[in-house]
Image 1 (cartoon, helix red, strand yellow):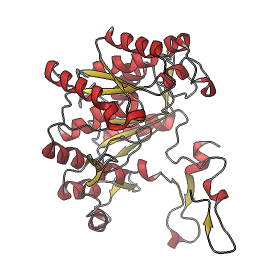
Image 2 (cartoon, one colour):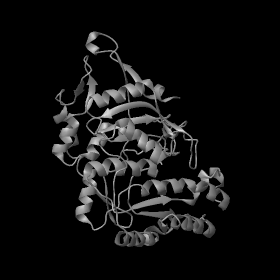
Image 3 (cartoon, one colour):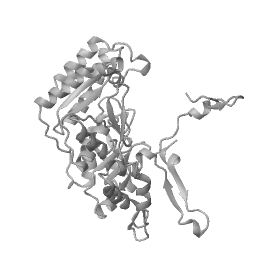
Image 4 (spheres, helix red, strand yellow):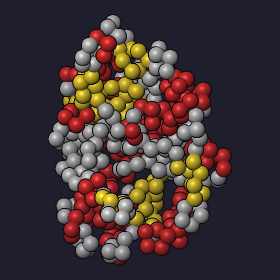
Length: 388
């Protein structure tokens, strides 16, 4: 089922009181502009400014209609008053952590809230924050969108890899990933190589950590470690999966050593002044390894309109599959000789970025073939079954 069948609807049918007939669409919450606004806002005043400039429609003259125009800003801010506050939780080992916000990195900007990060920086000497999915998505958006807007300058990047994923990129079926296969590892590690190269372009020291599983062999681990060191990266084995917090001590020590010995010269990969098309092309070529970018007629037209509306200085948020460096999830390893296809472009004026939808990625993902609801029932005694 293609994306347009899943998410597009026709609204305004019926009488004149039902409004204008138009095509619209759903977006999953984690890709919504409200989620982005919540995560990028500095405080309540900034939240209201961002909510107010969200574009909800265009009038007959082609001018944007905003939430401020509809006098909806105050009501939205009231709903988000408490949601704006970061959530303090604890891990199983009673370590404090802040979990706040949830934009997916494959279809949104993939980072927790600016308020969470800045709060953590006031509370601790060292702050670790996650950017979702692969470094071509989460890290790129953290470095080019969140850091740019929030004025953050990371001191180091931890790039997480697994032997299993690298062998998968080397062509090994999922059912056979547990067996040692150095040939597949050597073939698939080019994927890690590209991620290392990408992060080094931002001028930030890189620490590669191998998330160890009990099926990994010493020969495989040694190969990955040597590969990383030959490319100027620090390396640490993470055994958290097996040993909990104790298994992460080696990684923590390596990060602290890197912070002390290596200088960060962070800089986003493109400037604000570059055109939107130039920004999209920069990400496609420099981060994905594409030869170039193609646009659908509708995407090219919308890109031009956004520039004319004075939003050409915005960063770009690429919606792309997380399964490949390219926009085709079937291309594993380090693909080359491909073009990134942008089929749709739209502006998130409140968030302050422009979204470019590539390939067959969906911003309203559907359920699996067998939804969990199929296994839920109530027995004769009124006990619900199938929830766990």
